[in-house]
Length: 364
Figure 1: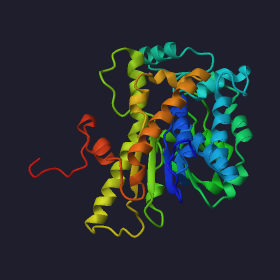
Figure 2 (figure 1 turned 45 degrees about the vertical axis):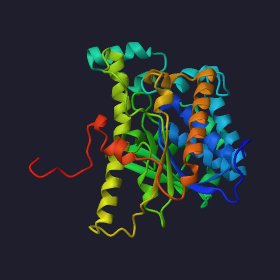
Figure 3 (figure 1 turned 90 degrees about the vertical axis):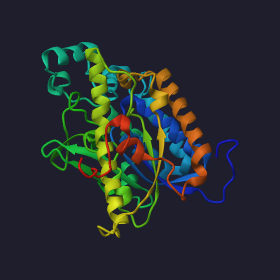
Figure 4 (figure 1 turned 180 degrees about the vertical axis):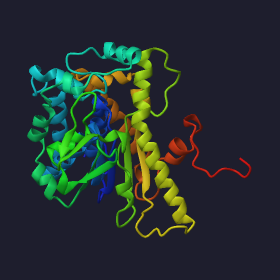
């Protein structure tokens, strides 16, 4: 338990939903580290996509191994390994750098690439950029995570999202299905890596369909508290003007769209249940919470999702720690009682997003 944290008799169970966002996933590392150090929350279930999927398996395996402190150590070891000066090695740094970004490919300048996409509307295939399909993150994951232990556990549920390349549909992988390849599939951006095959099917990054998966938390036996850790800004000031700014904002919007759609579906189902339009016996009205990295990450462009320097990771970790500490101070007492995030207003009816979850008015 962190120094100064209030003593409690029994930690409150929560489920974590971890958004993907390249190197910005280090913000999530900091948030999780603070939640674990605080000692007043225990893990019930975790979902994740892309970098969020990596945080999810590293977190849960550490917790299974030795509780909160082991989980904190697991996260530290993973992110130190991902960093440019970490244990993966400088020989494959460019590939790791690419994996933690949305647009950079090994040996290819990100800004030049963006201009090429805008001017020629063509992009380099991963079969040309990375023909050997090198992905050293798999080696790091195998070093940090005991996947057999993760598959066997029934104490903490894990849900990882990936996109089936053939069908375009999302798939949620659960504990007994999770392997190194499943995690890599969840983070396989098609401009950077060839599709990852799982059970004979090709998969790309799960952010296209669930970033992160939320629906599984509403299908449990009873309501739970779901904490969304968001690292993709839903709102930015100003309008992008340069080709590269357009590409950056396009990426952010694309990887938030699946979250908005899933939240709309959840709120619509909740409304139908409250009106007795549908049977709600298999759908639980869980309590929603959010640690929002938008303000903390506003100063960093989308391009910094490829920055794997130890200094940047440490800055993001401290940002996540600070925001999570503020969240705990303001909201912990309400966990188990009510939602503390109005995601309906922020994502579904938010005027800044131009969306409405309400039915049309008469005559509209």
